[in-house]
Image (cartoon, rainbow, N blue to C red; front, side, top):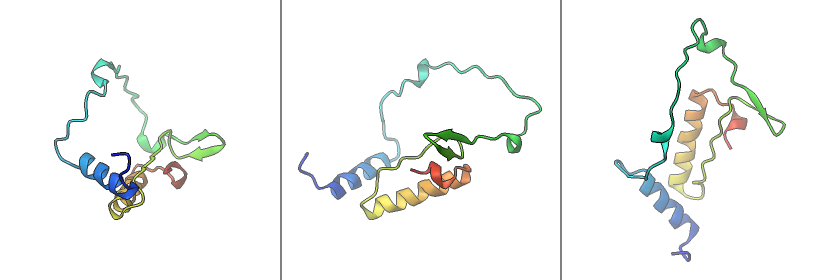
Length: 96
């Protein structure tokens, strides 16, 4: 399978992970306990999430790293990811 062309492999990955009901294994989140501590009186539009990473200012401490380029399906996926980033107010520098 290592002789498979890159575009074919990327298309196969997109098809696999785009399938409904796909079992991806145990990510381990059931072992994580989150303690909820509400910040009463804090409004989301007043919270600044920008941060600096390696001298680059990011809109939030999140980065998207789609690695699906090289195919038509991958381009569509990356454009969708970019729209999601825009809705989450991640600036262009955050979309890697």
